[in-house]
Length: 339
Image (cartoon, rainbow, N blue to C red; front, side, top):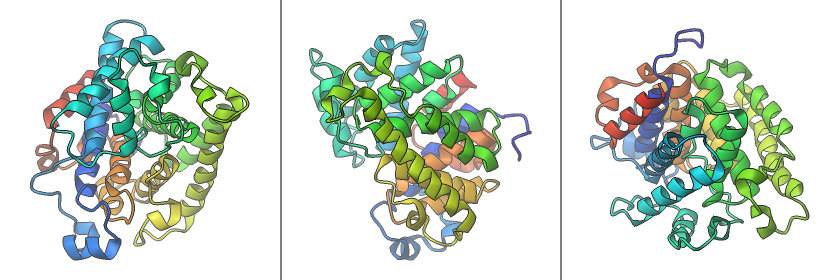
């Protein structure tokens, strides 16, 4: 399938794809590649677990999706309208008995602080954390229709900032949502890195004050522009590494060796994109490559699945896989709303 093909439910494809990647990578996280191969056999034949459980990556994507839907149902999307339902959804996730999938410390710490309704969200934000927990969940903001560029960018950064306040977490979330949007709209993968670099350069000193308020003052930066530029500069550096990797890396090697292990935001974005770009026309193989990696396998594969699903649509995924993914009905319902 090519980008000229009529899109077949790109939102559903994205959400099912990220959940499938999550379920493939969840059992291999924290393992090196030889251990994964010993456990799963040849990586190109890696099976989806019989019980296709997902991690906090998919759970928090759904939390974001539900919060975004609530906010958009109430009228024009703005920071206050989004912050309230998002905060509620994140706290509900934090307190849920299903929050038992090895969630990240940053999300747990921030969501515990967000429980206090009198606390400004900026005071709950973990300003020094750029873990991948914010951009692994941001795909819904690349899918929701009718948003302006300013709304999409601001909302992507705000949802990150509720937990991960580091400027690189903000920039990587913005870039991830932008990549999903571009692919869902039919952008050619061969030009994707260039489009993302241009976007990063254009936004390098644009601090989203309407959405972020005085978040930057929690850092040691002299100005808001200096604060946000640090994040975009780290993303630009990893995009340069990604551009080189796409040309030189063997598909048979661990992708984390080229663009990073994915525990931090910019590396998760780049390594997830690398796996997608190595196998543009083989979305299931892309997921397997991402899951058979030495780093944050579930988050890397989650992002790979989002990119592949946005580009190819829902038909990218085997029906017998899609039908048994955990939270399948919620994912399909949300996807149908935006398709």
